[in-house]
Image (cartoon, rainbow, N blue to C red; front, side):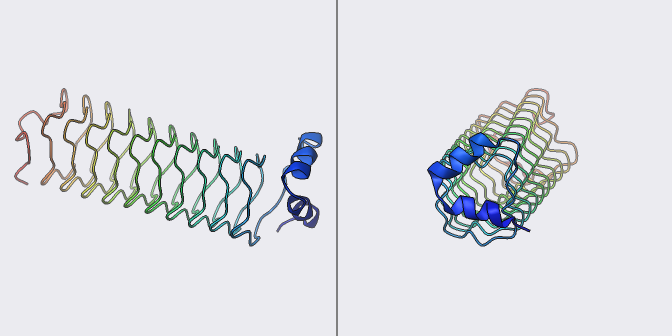
Length: 241
């Protein structure tokens, strides 16, 4: 439950909040279970703050520093987090549907079971993020970095990941039906037992990727690099299923 003093200090506004935080770097503010929908928190120092269970729907968090913040079960529907820093933030079970996370830093973030469907992840940094069982259906993740990310059992139905970077990413048992990965970098990625029905992998780099037990019905491979994948025998444009 939120601490009243911390809530009051947040309401003072950006300058006074920043001064207070700089004077008391050892305090981790507790703003949990609050209704902060629509709040203007742009560029604020929110490192280590607990927003557990809070509503930040439609909140403005552009360029805010949320490194290490606790956002488990938080609601961030339609929130704007453009260029926000969420390095090592905890977002387990959080709702980020239609959120703007363009160019945000989510490296090493814990997003297990989070809902990011329809979110804007263009050019976002999700390197080493844990997205196990997360929903990324219909996300716009063009040019995003998901190197060594854990996407096991994640739902990426119709996700747009053109030119995305997924070096050594784990997509074990992931749902990639109708996912667009054109020109993506997927070297050493693990697609074991994943569902790749009608997945677009044209011109992608799939070298050393693992497709053991994957469903490749209708997958598009025209122009893809498939060295050491066992996919060399597949037709260049579409498998028969």
